[in-house]
Amino acid sequence: AKVLLNHPTGGMKVPHFDAKNRSHAFFKGLPVTFLYTSCFVENFTSFFSLNQQADGSYQFTLPLGDGPIAWTILEDVGKMTAGIFERPGMIGETVGSASLHCSAAQLAAHISKATNKTVTYQCVPWKTFAAFGFPGADELAQMFKFFTDNQAEFLAIRDLKRCQELGGPLGDPVTTFKALSLKYA
Image 1: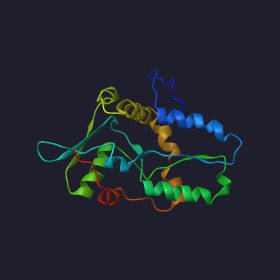
Image 2: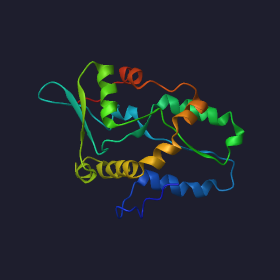
Image 3: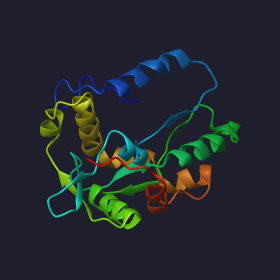
Image 4: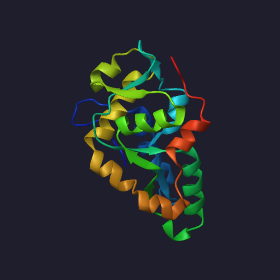
């Protein structure tokens, strides 16, 4: 379970993680399986925008560094959840969901291929992202800081082979991005 109130970066809070962690107490003694999701590629329809550059290309800005993180396609969460329900032996387990592990630069390449537009990734420090001032910027920045600070653990619980065992073939990011109404700015 994620408890970030005493994160090594000091006073770090990710309310949607902390709330989920606190909710675990309500399920104590019940036959449950916890499914931890990851960052949704569908966030590029709302939270994350593709910003047009002077040369006509597009860019998104996130504090993700250069390494991979887990990304989930929403349809895959449903398939994995159904797979969990079909396996009563999973009661008491905690599993993670992911459709792919890739860096933000690799994700930009997937978006480029899907849209036939040049899309690049611009990395900024998490504190810079937190200061952007839009609602939720601070929380998102700290969430991404958690992802990158705990990369090995975060990816391990979202093992792609296990996700495929639960949900069948995982979604293709290029196909998914082709079907989405991406947010352009």
